[in-house]
Length: 498
Image 1 (cartoon, rainbow, N blue to C red):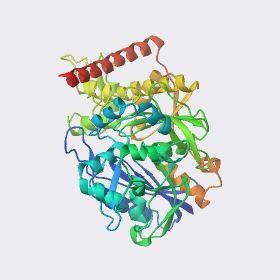
Image 2 (image 1 turned 180 degrees about the horizontal axis):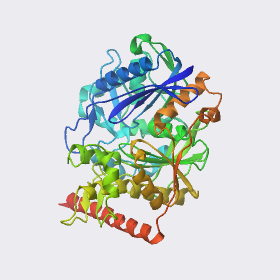
Image 3 (image 1 turned 90 degrees about the horizontal axis):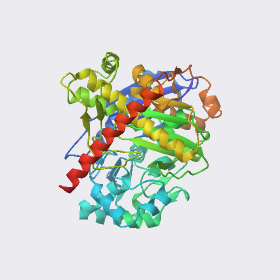
Image 4 (image 1 turned 45 degrees about the vertical axis):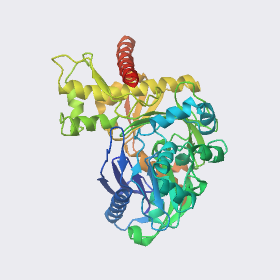
């Protein structure tokens, strides 16, 4: 049966799926990897470990799929995480700096103070923030003069995680990426669809370090047999959120999706029209129905499912994420308790790198159910803020929100979300749409599916959640959230001036 192997390399782990042409999962494997926090606000990954884990789960998924006729490989990845490696040895020269990392906050402030914000936004569609990989790459080159010299001599390669994986899968032959990943670097002109020489000069990044940018659906490289035990063409690449947008079938203007993973990311396809945001959103490159470049508005919430992990791993209030659903249901209301999980700053629409998390409204009667409910509610409140900004910027009235990701399996959260955003929330039968999108992009290029509509035909029926919340309750809850966010930002401001 014609099928596609897809690798979903995420922030906390790597997933591999073998997906048949009729939409069935023939093989699946997953493994987590180590998170490194060398200083407060710093987040790193071992790129070599990511490669080892990813290769292992891909091989495991292929074994599980048995004699499936695997015709192509697709890759989706955490987007803004940056890796620098030696071109000759293939060894990383530093741990990967993760999208959550805030070490370049001061550098970003200097760029803003020096008046670069408007020009960078015009060229890239992005705001100046440590979230994006450009300043991370600058920091790496400035932190070690030897690295700068080697980069300028052409000895080093740099790329987002997709580039790193393709480099290893191809035996070191290929250095490539796609427009969705390139558009997250602060170095890529999304109108010209090319690396921008002025931005490269501003950030001090030699062009020779960067990968070739190719369409998201098409030929990238060949995975050598020694990597996974089978030789496969790599035919699809997209950053995780754009891949999920494609996997949800949102390839026409006006369709929106929200992915709940470590963070939460809402994208609205605007087609061939680039929409400029006045409300803290990003303009980014997405995929059209053939994998061609299109545009989308995006709102990035840095912490979503990671807040539940925090309850589990650091506070020890739960032993599994699934417990939060019943804990939330055990309360008739939040009783005024709000969690603002700004552990690595606030993303859209606030963009406050200095903000840090807080839980507010505690009384002596507050317990673990309040913490669990507050973590779930925070995902909905942040989504509502972003969706409101998106509707105002684009003029598109959102009637439906398609959701996916691990936290989308929580029915209570989606019921609450439907009420807070006041529109239909649609969850697909397969919530791993990030991996599904990369499979679709690769499968289209391989001829596994005739076209994008054929790709969607075999999907099972989605689950629909409708709003039952009153206008007054919605307004009251959002007012409380806004007060909590203002309090967090006020505290960050006080710290900054102390």
